[in-house]
Length: 171
Ligand SMILES: [Cu+2]
Image (tube, rainbow, N blue to C red; front, side, top):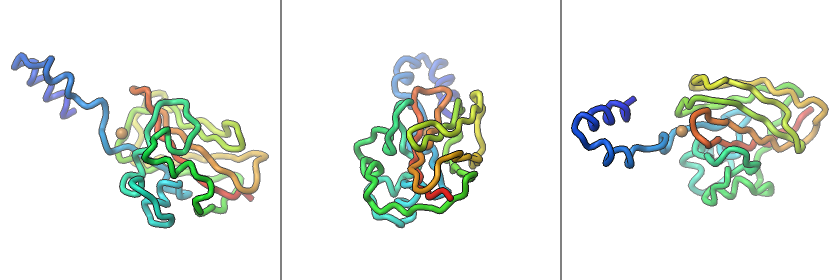
């Protein structure tokens, strides 16, 4: 909203081309992550596991759509891909609520959950703007025991997605 207003003012002043190139594509530091069960980046932020810069911005694991890595392809957050880092594994039941905390409520295409090498759940928001918290009920089906869940938040109006890995033990 703020950007649009600035642009309108700029067009009026005849400097639109100059300003247009400097307009941010999206909000630089505000996005979202899974808070519970605690995702890897949530554990970094809480100090459950000691981490690098991701601990300051657990909401920023953004990358192109279609990736399968916990880091969303960000070299700075590569430690999120390390399965041996001592992540706390949360015991969960076959049907479990996954809760997202969104610091920017981006228009959303889909939310996807992968485990055991396949997609186990998908929720289609059809471009709607989510609330500050989003909860999904995910059913693990025949998957039991220790699982690494990759959750993906696909943004409707950019080519990007947000990624969060959650370590659980399904019983
Ligand atoms: Cu964002």
